Each structure stands twice: as C-alpha cells, then as structure tokens.
Length: 219
Length: 219
Image (tube, rainbow over the protein chains, first blue to last red):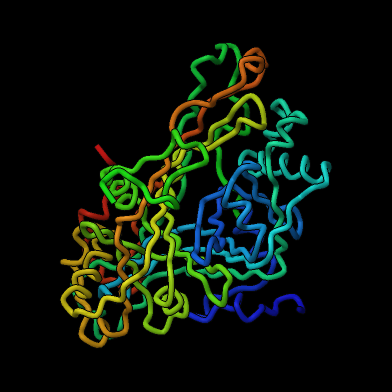
C-alpha cells in the first residue's frame, strides 16, 4: 500500500475530515501517549486491556507477562491497538454539538512474538525509555531470567490511521444568540512532585528526567 | 451471579491481588473517566475506538452517530468496554519492576440499542452531565431530529471488574542498595483556563462548573 493510502478498515469514515494518515502525525501521537488499549478476539468475543507500548521506527511494541491470556489470544489472530490523547472538552451551546478535542491512533494487524533476544532486549529498553526518556540507562537492566519472563509483541505500523479534532465548538447558526457560555476547556496530563520510595536513601536525588516531567509533544 | 462474584472472563487473573469486583469501586472509576474504549468484532477481527460514556445506575451508556459502523458492529455481537485512569509512573530500581499506578475497569456484555425515546433523551442528558456536571441544564437540549441522529447503546454492568495498582515500586531486595532513584511520579488530568468561543459575546461569563474543573473522585 503506498504511504498515506489507508487500508479499507483503517480509513476514517465517521467525520473523515478528521482522518490523518501521515506517519509523522501517527508517530507523534503514539510517542506522546503513555499507554494503549489492545483489543483481541477470545472465543469469538472482544477483549480490550490497557498496556504500555513503545514505538521503534515502524514497529509498535507492547509487553506483558509470558503467562498473560490476552497476549496469547493476541498472537492467535488479528489485533487492534488504540491510543487516545484527550486535549479538551468542546462545550457548545447545544447538547448535540458537544464534542472533545482529541488525537487518536488506531493500528490494525497481526502481532508478532519477538523471539530474537537482541530485539527483545532492545524493545524492553524502549518500553522503559518511552515512559521516562533516559531511564533505561539509569536502572539495573533486565537479567536473562527477567527477559524470558517478559513477552514482547510487535505490531507493524503499516495499517494505521490517526483521527484529530481541534478548535472551538461548531454550533448551529441559530444557536449563536443563546446566552450560553461556549468554548473549550483544555485538559492535559500533569505530573506532580516525585514521591520517593519509603526505602530510598535520603542522599539519592531526583534525576533531571523526572523534574518538570512532560510528555514529548510534536513540533 | 451474586454480587462480588466475577464471571470467568471478568475475573482478573494477571496480578489477581489487584482485582476488585465491588460496584462502588467500579462505579467510581467509570464516573471519573471522561471516555472509554469500546471493542467489537468486525469480520472476525477486533476493532477498538474511543467513545464518551456515562453511567446511570446499573447501565453504562455510550453514544455515537446512527451511521457509525462501530456501533452497528457492536450491536451484532459481544462488546467489551475498558476505562483506564493513569495515576502515576512507578519507577523501580530495575527495569523489570517498573510499573504504573492505575485504576481500570473492563465490562463485558452485549450492547442493547436504546429505542425508548425517554430513555434515549435521559441517556443523552447523562452523557453531557458526565463530562461537565450540570451542563445539560445550561444548554439547548437536543431536538427530536438530533435525538434521532444519535444512537444510544446500553451495556449492563453485571459483568465488570476493576483492577487497581497503588503505592511505591516493589523492588527485589538485592536491588535496594543500588544508587538509583526510586518512587512514584504522580500524574493527573488537569484543566487549563477555559477558552471562549471566538463568537461568544463578551458579557457571558464562564459558568461555575467550568471554573476549577476537576473530575469527581471517590471518597
């Protein structure tokens, strides 16, 4: 499929003007979001669970325990991953025109179990660095037993689409004269003060990558 | 099924000590979260999309356009809804013991299309008030044509479970002597300053329910 040409199921049909298929847009959303929702089919019925993910180039990795039934189910068939960033509440003058500003990505495909030890270790580092950039180099890396306990699944980003809404409410012309406050209430994920582990020695400082923590944003 | 006794698929198996089945816990998570992820099966493959939801008693409502293929697919079979609140990053001394503090709910069941006009109108009010409590009474209500354009689906909460992680990292004893900062970085969704619609007359003030906006929290 040529770049920017979505598959039939990845194409945004509801509100198609909100659809985006450029990898730069898709990647920025995947990289900013801290977690995703992975949907699989188990005994013919859908199952969806939150998971941490990390993108490395054209591949999205998720991880879980080797004993997880959701991961096992995901390997047996098709999977779908959704990532959603909520940017604001869109408050219109009518109930009907209420909306939200958001950036979301949906990825379709078949998960591949990562069996190469080098790829698995790299993915596990990427998952730590996805959450806190630079963290993987600061902590004790996974030992061979820990690497084996962790199942890493890879999903190719070839079948992905983004959907983005921005801007103020879109009210009906007839509603513009109503005495109703309308606009956007922006929302963002904010970090509080780091809370040291009760067993942390007092002389170990908060590292720079946890001070003023913010998710990476595009541009 | 007796209260507090989860169905086989709703039972938390990975980290079962994090499972919770009391409706008070489940309801508080559903009520705080601004949106959910709805998973369905389309042509044998999973599909997951973000949606706004609202709980009214024992029923979770979601809404979308009457033309939505995701909603149509959801009506044809089983559905699964996940709601996830991220409370913090759990930063351990080892890569392996990194985690997140979160509160999540998964609901299984078959969606029912709401056809009763009274129930549909009540659900549409609940969806507005779920996002901003008190907002439904402040805006122009949906007219009959708008009510008909909106599909409302109901999911019974009888098959639901919550999963909750709180507290500091759990490190291996052997790692406690490492010179690595460990602890929790708390995260929360924060509202910024309300941004008036460009066409809003200057004399209309920001309503009280949008000042110091916070999601409801349990207790």
